[in-house]
Length: 251
View 1 (cartoon, rainbow, N blue to C red):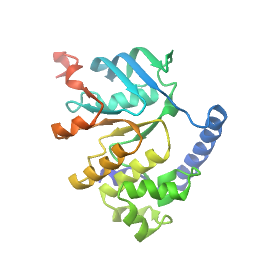
View 2: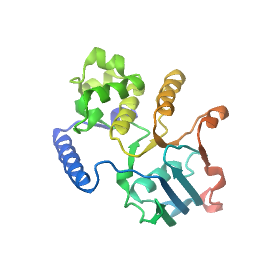
View 3: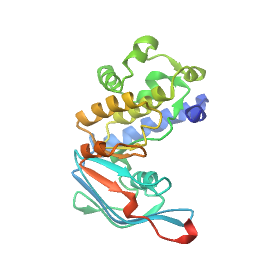
View 4: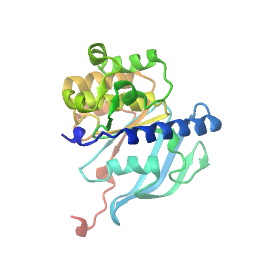
């Protein structure tokens, strides 16, 4: 139901997004054709919502090619950290260093592609929901969709399949995979994956993670449910149990 609640059903919204994507792409092409990074360091980060501290003194070091898992209790600030990385919101860091240069929070948004906990689906074609109107080779879209087990959906429905009222005919897992595919196809240096397992069964989750791990992606993934042995696949595990703000007024 949550995926359905995130369905954008108005054409004006879609048109505005297409215009925004085109404008952003033009600006970004002027700046750099392919933004890259080698290392991102976030030092002494405190996270907060509505003036309440969620976590404190977090140190995050992401190197190109690394797979980073973020674990911890519900409400501890894991998803909030992804918002901080992407937009510079809901937190304050002593220092952020990108490739040996100090940068301001929220100034490097173009490094990231984000996949949320609940899929945002637009009332447009499957192709638009995957590409957001960007000029991406069909072969690349097919490759990513096959890796995320969307190949059968494409074979049955086609890229021109309208996702509006028809979105109700897709499972939550399919909608979630469309969201992940969209993030991958954005072709940004770092993927931010926020509980992508939430709508997936164990078999699908295993297959999709196998594809993500086998591909040359750098990603930070918030995980809520996991088996301890699964964490061994990640290069770095950030455990929010270590960063909790101990204040009885928050309990």
